[in-house]
Length: 301
Image 1 (tube, rainbow, N blue to C red):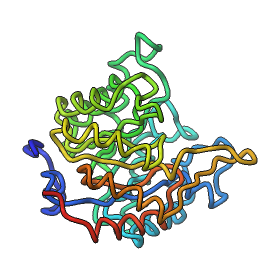
Image 2: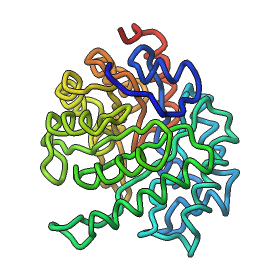
Image 3: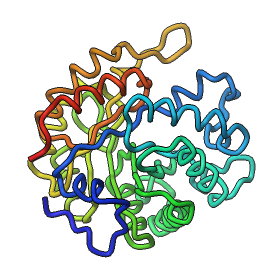
Image 4: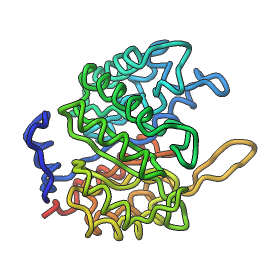
């Protein structure tokens, strides 16, 4: 691995080994899926506000993932961009509360999530790239100030937006930066990015781990992971959904159970994924099965 860790604050020796591609790392699963089950979220309410209004519930989700074997949990900050304010709360407040909730569960590492802005960058939309960079920089600073160990830019479909977020985090913090894109069942992101193009771009930006999350299940993710692995100059991340989502009775459901999820992740590990977890529809049970698979399997070379 050619990952450059100079000028980065790495939490401990084990995380350094992970970022050098010499040790695996198990991330957590879905936060939104679990918070929806609490009944605390009103329809359309963003989950980020629960880190302030119901911190015990958020910490309970993190703790369940830690007990299932997750080494890194992701703070409840995915939609905390200034473009999607929650009841007037500042980005700094949301990140501070969310990281504190995650830290209270006593994981080995806490990541802060930077999700998409929800708008398209020019020329496809009306968001100026410099404005997007400023929004992501504010989140990255808030994440570092709150005490996160890692910044995770995730669920991106536009390479331009992913780059704005990644470069902002690299420029304004000393933390390791992970980036994952979201690919559809057709093998491209919503903006038409291929796994190969993504891998080349992500390597060029100098991020510390990269790959894919969301949208598809582990079976559909396997060929995408295999396409990215040989082109990345950093550890490969794969965090698929618990299968392809479908609507049933007005609710989004996922059909891949914990054991099937772990079984389908085996080829992904064999393809070279070093950092694995779950996205939408996954639960602590999915993560427990995945963590057992990682523990029993070979270490990255």
